[in-house]
Length: 290
Image (cartoon, rainbow, N blue to C red; front, side, top):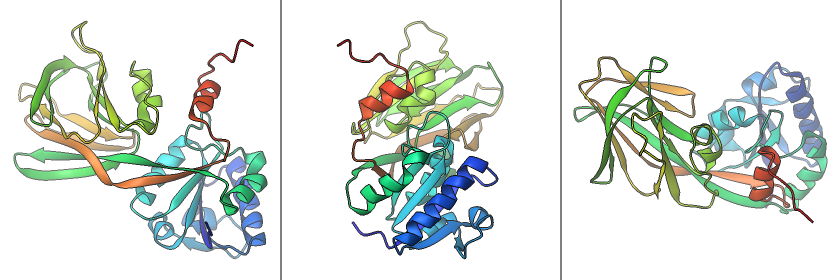
């Protein structure tokens, strides 16, 4: 696949990120690519690189390269997923589940990318909508997870959970994590949820400190519509957070609908990408015995 215009995105004022961005500019120009950079990054470059917003990169570029950690990738991905663009990550963070190109391998991996020697996959994302009565108050998308939680630490709430038209349970707990396969190795994993391999069309529902020993994570069809009805008995407002970034206030008596977003994140990986190898490396699992 030919990438004629490439957009660069990264964390500004970060020395290691800056070094990788400059390497990318040189490598991409040597391949006669039209290079554009997210506005904050463009301001730090000496080259005559055109500045663009994240959305403009999604509209105008064929490939976006995100330099940083998974947090940087998630922030960019929520915008880029609205456009027909491939996305690849250079890891300048810690774990790097989504940013899997080593900074030392930029030149060789760009060769693979431009020679179409890559592993491509699409990751679905979620849409969370908050309703008061029948009126939509606010909505936002999430790559990893949507979390219902209290605005106060260690504070319980009451809510009902429905999958489609089926009532599942009412619960008193600190909240609920609704995670995609992409997010199953993030907050959901810390909460005791299962790991879902990326190609599964499934969601995991992970209760947060439920007030019952029988409550366990549940895996459901990702095409289900989830409804959370917030009890009017709650004395305080609760919140919905998307990827631990966007926070939406939810009042007692409101309800939240969570379903698949119509957009997808199109990820590009190195040709030797293997999900189980990623898990082994990032989570320090044991290697082969022999």
